[in-house]
Length: 241
Length: 241
DNA sequence: CGACACCTTGAAGAGGTTCAAGAAATGTGG
DNA sequence: CCACATTTCTTGAACCTCTTCAAGGTGTCG
Image 1 (spheres, rainbow over the protein chains, first blue to last red):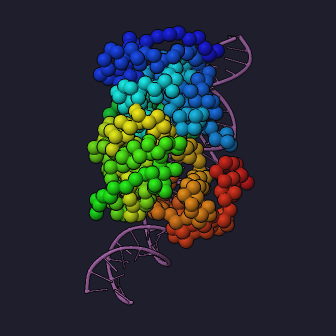
Image 2 (cartoon, chains in turn blue, cyan, green, yellow):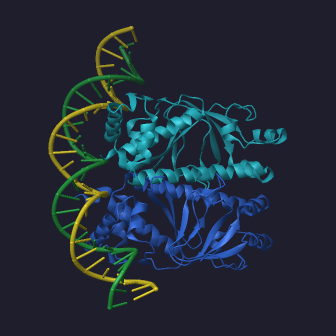
Image 3 (tube, rainbow over the protein chains, first blue to last red):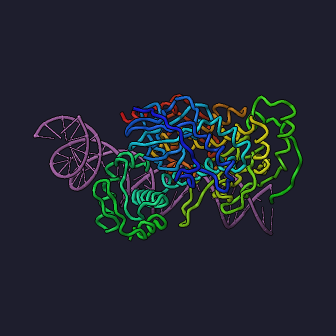
């Protein structure tokens, strides 16, 4: 089930470097604490919001892992992103006042609920917060440009390499290993995100393992040769001998 | 060449329904006029900004047609969008204070230059403007979700159909025909945007023409059967007999 | 322990790419 | 204003990557 709300402060949250603007004085800090109206626990498999829901708030992930996905009328499904601690979800809902994608927890999670009206109100007063909100949205736009490049011009191996490197990089920024990770999503979800079928994802993992680039045991992945993965992403010509 | 600046007002611009928030009183309207520091003419083929440039301003297109594209280190190129009158460019630059893509005029164009600091300043005072900026960014995020769906799950015919329908729809919103359009971009640029090779774009156009869906003479396209195009986009099963 | 979801692997097939050549438009300079 | 160079577009044929279909294996959870 969803629900259970606790009242807490950003100012002593260990994720504040990720969520919050830098260089605030303590008065501003305290005001920002008020932005988080509550926290909310979401169980694995549950939706934080779904397409069509009224948009009220942005959500900052405290713990857990999410996917966002859109589904067109004909049942086509596209994972548009995977989100982890410190990242913001819900930006899609601002334009039409309704969410246009689903946010589904891939493991038990907890999010901070930040009513958007409150964010707007406060960012009129705190310039750093205003700019921070703009940066968060701009960052999402730039990220999506990268996904477009990936989907539009890369081959299966390049896509999966880029995906893995991106994941470990983000995990590393959160204090996790640079070379080991546990995938929280299925092959099918990876495939949807990368524009590939799950079989292709599986085969590509196997090929990487054969070539000694990674070690794969189900969802446990160890990156053995990050440079080779990087080369794969940056230099498409080097795998056609 | 670039340059040539004129001082003008949004309040009596015929594109204001596209660029500006609704429901402003005339005092607010006048203040917003100040946001546009100047206008700028860009000749066909020239860049309004390029990746790496310092970010200073957003740009609203007054006339003309643009493409935005990113290029990765290895020379891979991806068109991330085509922009027309009333649309805003430059949002990618906010997050890092530098642009991350190129904006290239596909025909002679004129844009309004809106210094971003000025936008931020004014949106602290005018709530409607603040929300408007948020909506513009959110709209771009949602648009890119759609492109991800297209690139991730559609086949060539579906992609081109979706592309054409999207173009005429936007042109129609600007008073142009619902069924006729002149493409301002090459087959290669369409292909880059859609994740296809130019030959595939050309072949798909030819197939649409054979099937009586469109009439194509180089860059002049007439849509003969919009419903068939829509069906193609929404119902992938109906062309595999 | 059994049911179910998830993953791997093989073989055949389709869709899109690549390479190549020629045609049609566009632009340039005399 | 025409001739020529250049860019853009079209079309064909061979090829390749990814998908589809199928079957079996592995892991997980009640």
